[in-house]
Image (cartoon, rainbow, N blue to C red; front, side, top):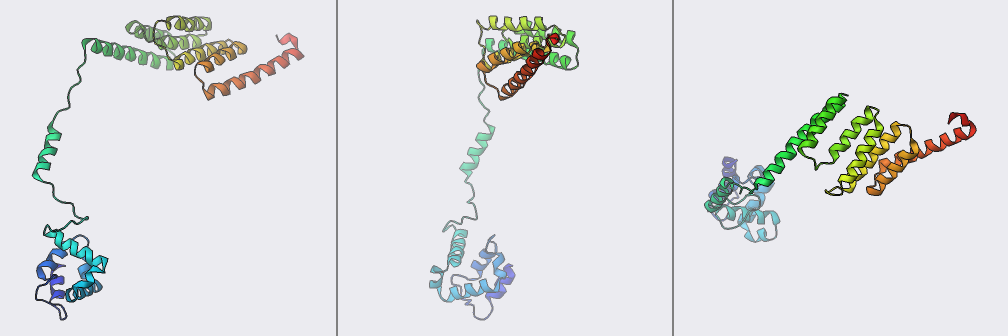
Length: 257
């Protein structure tokens, strides 16, 4: 492209006496990412020739103004938005320093380290219990949850996990007793409204397992008071419809009771 530009530049009608668009300038322009390819465009070259003869036209032609900025920018005389300025050595050094500087370590007390270790071991035992529960190995799951509780007694939701196991084992009264004990223990530890709702939902599940719809609805209602859940609201409406249906059946045929 540079060679073509030079040949075009030496063609008749183009002032070879130097000027703004002398051979050196054309060579510089040929290396520009935007205007270099345009040197092969006859229309563009014609505009350059006209600008060479009449520099005033550059002031009224936006493209020629860009060309002028590109040429001046190549000599450090102006800024070209398409070509980023090379970073100074100071900038490079600053970036290298930022890369090599290690992040400051957060000091952790021995008490915090111990607490983290307790949580980590307790969670590991709980996850083991969850896997055993999914495999319906309920006795082993209870043992895993008990291990987690012994490591971190402050995590009351581990008891809620135990209650779920007892429901699956059809020991629903035991599950309800465990859930009620959670509320007693929660008086001395931090216990969120969301977790309280989950415990009431577990109690409701135990009542449903025993086919006691009215008590299940009550438990779900208490859960909603702690933390509202649209899914629970939908479940309550279905249970209320089921209860009405049963009440009608009992009215028609009392022997069903």
